[in-house]
Structures are given as C-alpha cells and as structure tokens.
Amino acid sequence: MIRFKSILSRIVILHVVAVVITSILMSVALSWLLSYATDNIHDKAMQEQAVTVGQHLRARSDGSLELDLPLDLLGLYSQAYGRYSYSVIDDRGRVLFSSLKDNAALFPDDTRSADVEFLMLRRGDATVSGASVRKTIGGQTVWLQAGEDLANRDVLIDDIVADFYKNVGWITLPILLVLLIIDIAIFRRALRPLRQASETASHIGPARTGLRLPIEEIPREVLPLVLAVNEALDRLEEGFRIQRDFTADAAHELRTPLAILRTRLDLLKDEQIGQALRQDVEGMAHIISQLLDIAELDAFVVDPLAKADLRAVTAEIAEFVAPLALAQGKDVALLGATEPVWVKANPEMLSRAIRNLAENAINHTARGTTVEFVVEDNGTVSVIDHGPGVAEDERKLIFQRFWRRDRRKAGSTGLGLSIVQRIAELHAATITVENRRPRGARFSLRFAALRA
Image (tube, rainbow, N blue to C red; front, side, top):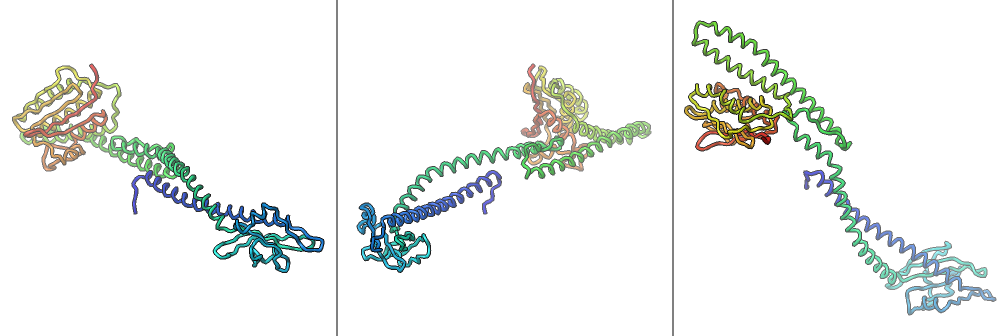
C-alpha cells in the first residue's frame, strides 16, 4: 500500500479518488434517471394514444361500435410504418378493432382489471410496450390498447444518451479539474497554521526555550496536540531554568571557599607544594568562571543598538593572552585590519568569545609557533593555531558542553567553545572551523558589520 508522507498529498489523492467514484456514480445515476424518465414519457404517451383512439370510437344505433380514425392516425398505425399499433377489446375478450394485419389483440394477456395498465410482450424479434385503458361507450366497456415497438425507441434513446454524455463529458471534466485546483488551494490555506507552527517549532531549542507553538487558527482536531506540546515545552523550560539556577548558585558558592583556599596556600612553608596546589585552584577557578559565564549567557539578551570595535577588542585580548603564550614558548600576532571595524555586538560578550578562542588556540598550538588573530573589514575575526586540527566528525561535537577528545588530559573543561557558540547564537553570528595545511586549525567568527 502506498503511503504518502505529506498530509496535503493524502488529501488530494483521496479527493481525486472520491471525485472519480462520484463521477462514475453520477454517470450511472444519470443513466438510470434518463431511462426512468424515458419510460415514464413512453407510458404517458401510450396512455394518451389509447385515449385518442377511444375518442374516435362511437356507438351505432344498433348498439354496435364503430371506429373512425382520421388519416393522420391511420398513417401512424399503418403496418408500413410499423412503429405503433392499437387494438380494441370488449369485456368478453373479443378483438373489435386492431391495426395488426391478423386482427389480433395487441396484448392478449391483458387482465383488464384496472382502469389503466402498462404492458409489455415479445412479438417475434420485437418488444412491444404500451398501455391498456378502460372506457365505457354506449353502455359497453372496452379496453383500448396502444403500443410501440421498442426497437425504434431504443435507437432514439441511444442517440440521446450518446449525445448527452458527449456534451456532459466536455463540461464535467473541466469542472472537476477546476474543483480539484480549488480544493488544493483550500487545503493549503487550511494547513497554513500547521506550517507556521512547524516553522516556530524549528526555532525552539536550548537557546530559545521561551518560544511556544501558536494556537491561533489551529484546527480544532489538532489543537489538543499543539497544547500538549506547549505544556511539554513549559516543563522543559522549567527544567532548564532549574539547571541554570543550580549552575549559577553552585559556581557562586564555590568562589568563597576557593578564595579562602588561595589565602591558606600562601601560608604553606613548602613553596613547591604550594605552587602545585595553586595551579589546581586556578584550574578550579577557571571552571567556575566558565560555569558562571554559561549561566549568564542563558539569560542574556543582546541590546539591538549595541556595537563594538572588533579590532580594538581583538587587540585587547591578544595583549591579555600574550604573557600566557610566551610563558609556554609560543608567540601571538595581530594581523588584518588597521582601522576600527564596527560590528553589531555587545563588547563584553565579544571579548569573552575571542578570549575563549585564544585560550583554546594556545592550548593546542605547538611550542615555537604563533597564534594569529586576523581581523577583516567584513566583521570577521579568525584565530589560527598550529595544532593537530579538528577532524571532520568532531566539528560539531567540539561545541557541546563538557565535550573533550581526551578526558584524561588535564587543563581542559570542554566549556570554552560552547561559550563561543552561545555568544555567536545570541548575536546571530556565524562560527566556522577549517583545518590548515600542513597542520593547524582556523576558527572564524563573523558578526554583522556596521558602516563607519
């Protein structure tokens, strides 16, 4: 059985099937109605012919009956014409008058029990259908029979039916086609609220948990599903809120113990142990700082009028991380634009994104190489390292929170690049990753540039 994934295609196909079935049923019904109407017209005509014959029947003075048909009726009932016939039968079943050459009754089996009776019989190869009408003349009761050879009538009906269906076909097919086109337009209009809800749903994610599916104009049959989805999104948003609050509260609560721990480490007499512990404490402080950044970014809203000088912010970060790079035997270089490059961005968030990219590059670049900051006039800042690069199958994973290639390796929390991506999402910026030859990676952030 063919299954259609589109509800519109399902409706259209089912509608086409319904139209075809309806057309067939309409044709059968029209054919039956036409035949029924023709039979009624025929019966009425035969009854009128019998009555007409009776109008020319009169009683003589001796009590016998006389039939005096005018010339037009004599021609109508002549054997040469052969289409119509009549006969007159008395109450004893004797044939008084007949247009048949053997002076026989037109309908010998006439029961003569009703005032008007419609009869049919086979005579040779012909089928005769007609009427029998009772009439009293001069005190005598007679039955006037009139009939028609259906072979002549069927030819006429066939011509009428053939011409009728030919004309109706030329009219019906375009009407059905127009109806189908109109129905498709109606179906598309009826499904528009569902398409809008689907478009809204595609934008819902961890970064935009406040969005809900619109319920205006949603069909009543689908409304319970939409309401259930919105309620599920409410529960998910509440879960995200609790998670954010827990992260922020835990990070804040840990800051004070770490500050106390730093103070006590300064009192240690063994400087070597103290230095090692200080490095551990600094690593913990860095993790806490990033957790606070994530908690803040989840609730942060960018001012539409915010702007920043991309080159100035990048230069500030390069100067900030230079001592760290030099301490590890690595250099820092600022390249690209020499004039201010204004972009639509919050300066503080822009600084955090570039700083995390810089720290990531310094951690992965080899000793004796240079971490390059490249600022372009189109609002793009790139951070280039000379490390191992990023495998194709890892380029999406590296932006997930707490993801690390090697979890046994110290010095990495797996939060830096997720912070960069979140800042890019807030600013509708794009972030790309590409490998360099012979080795190294290039992380690029592109913001909407403003005219000078």
